[in-house]
Image 1 (tube, rainbow, N blue to C red):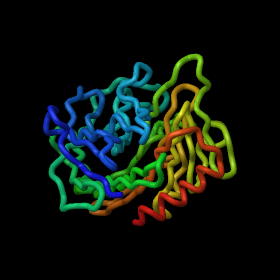
Image 2 (cartoon, one colour; image 1 turned 30 degrees about the vertical axis):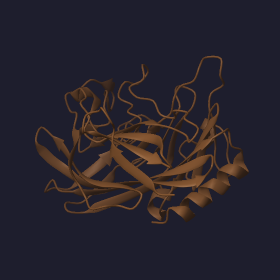
Image 3 (tube, rainbow, N blue to C red; image 1 turned 180 degrees about the vertical axis):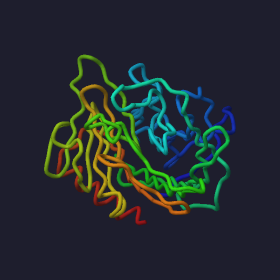
Image 4 (cartoon, one colour; image 1 turned 120 degrees about the vertical axis):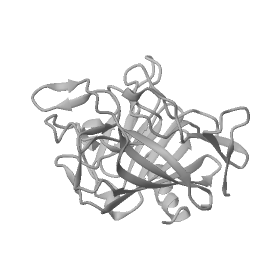
Length: 296
């Protein structure tokens, strides 16, 4: 069944709601009003299972710059599009005035089962990147649906750029930057979410690994992240379950990712949003179904 995007009744015009079979499953804030230190950018929150469980978190106390589901990069030629402090080699995290903004510049033509937009990645009026983003949704079963997120970034700065991360700036293992999903932190009495791939289990084993899919299973919900193309499947997964629950696909895990003037890069993540705590066979089956139902 196809998805429907519409303005949220009674809300400002910068938020739209994604519905499947009449049920609201996600809010997309495409023009947020946020402090500069959070690197303002569009985000999805709340995202819900078909049963109504919220599986994203917005501006949590532990990381106020985590914004549900977003495309966030901590270092684009020194500009912070992630929010919060910047990791500086030999100094550690430093509060710098270097935050960028992702600005919605317009909607593109109709997209089946979703929306497509153009964005401008800027710092103090200078445009570094232009982005074409498509977000689609597909029903998979009575208890699961898929969120299809594709981002194509083009270097329009007039000079060569590169993407970095705290890891490339001297903090091993902190190669975050790209598509990122902040999941909700559950009660202190609940165990941390379980994370696994087809061949490995646990944060230590899957963090920094490459895998066609990765599952994060909480209390009553499971997210299955699937690389939607070969390029994305080569990116390592950034995973947290102990400090907080979050999963991302890393653009710059160990070394900076160059992007020549005028060149473009594209990444696609399809995320299964399911009710219930899935085991490995069930997660694998839904990962395969998601790519079958939502072909590129």
